Image 1 (cartoon, rainbow, N blue to C red):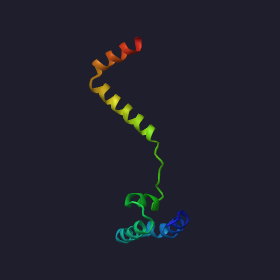
Image 2 (cartoon, rainbow, N blue to C red):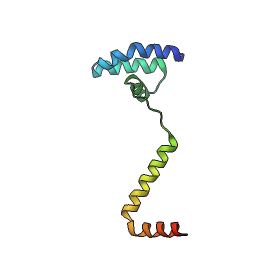
Image 3 (cartoon, helix red, strand yellow):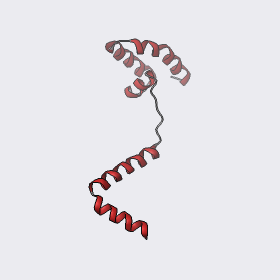
Image 4 (cartoon, one colour):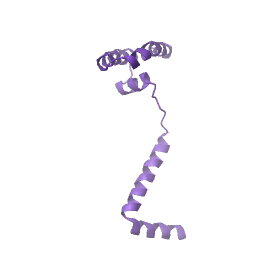
Length: 89
């Protein structure tokens, strides 16, 4: 299926999907995934118009900072001494 035909199918199906009940959404989702070849979770996001582009480097730095802060809070004395010594060198 070409990208243009996927977009056309999405334009037709999206308004109906947003108004449908849970059972109807499941059926529509099955048909949409079989027609487009999308994974089920991606198809849900596309139909709800919630597709987000992720910056993988940004996510890794956030994770690293979160872990660093978590360890700094739990091991505050040791890490603060190490951090102070590494900055003064």
